[in-house]
Length: 349
Image (cartoon, rainbow, N blue to C red; front, side, top):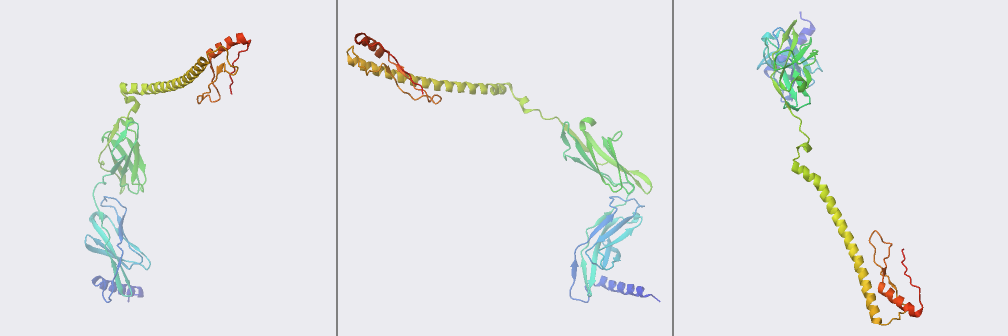
C-alpha cells in the first residue's frame, strides 16, 4: 500500500503529464513567464571526461516545473517546492554529455498553465587538454613610448585547487613572469617594462592547474606584439637655425622700434617748444622796430614770457624766453634816464 506522500506525488505527476501534452488545456487563458537563465558551475570552457558539472535554471518566482533540454530534446525535469525559483541538475563524469543545453519554466495556478521561452543555450565542451588562455594588452595597440610600462592580462580555466599562470616572450626559455593563483581567480594581470625585457617582442601566456589529481598544462595563448617607439623630442630642439635667429632678433627689433618712436615723440615736443620761442622773439622785435626811439616805456617788458603747455610728465613747469633785443634797448635807455636796474624773473609752480 502506497503512503499518502506517494499518492500526492503520483497525482502531481499525472497532472504534469497532462500538462506536457496540453500545457493550456482545460481553460481559456495561458500566461507566459519571462525567459529563464541557464548557468554552468564551474564555468570551464573545456571539461575533462572525469569532471562533474551542474546545470542551474533560474526562473521567476514562483514556478512549478523546470524542464531541461539537451540539444532540442528534453532529457529531464525538476519539480520545485512552493516559493522556490531555481533548480539544478548534476551531470556526473561529463564524458558523454558534450552538447548544447537549454531550460524552460512552467507554472500552474487555478488549473491554468503558463510557460516561458527557452533560455539561451550553454555549451559543454569535453576534451583531453585544457582550454587555450586568452590574452589582452593595455594599450590595445601594444605600442608604447620608450620608458612606459605595458599591461598584459591572461584569462585561464584554473581549477578549484588553484594553479599558476606564466608569461613568456617569444615562447622560448623560462617565463618572464609567473603568478600563483587560487581556484576562484580566472584572470591574472602582468606589468612589464619592454626596456628591461629587451625592447619589445611577442608575448604569450599559458597556465597549469590540477585536474582530477594531476597537474596539466594548457597550450600557449595567441601572441601579442609589444612595440616600443622613441620618446618624441622637445619641439624647441627641432627649430632650424634661420627660425632660431628670427626668434632672437624679434625682441631686439621690437625694442629698437620702441626707442625710435619714443625719440620721435621727444623731437616733436622739442620742435613745438622752439617754435613757440621763435614766435615770441619775432613779435617783440617788430614791436621794438616800430617804436623808433631810444626811450623805452617803463611798461615795456624786458623779458617776454610765453606760457606753454608742458609735456604730460611736466605739467607744473612754465617756460620763459629772454628777449635780448629788448634788454639791450633797456640798457641804452638806462644811460640817459639813470635807470640801472635790469632783472628777469622766472616763476616755477
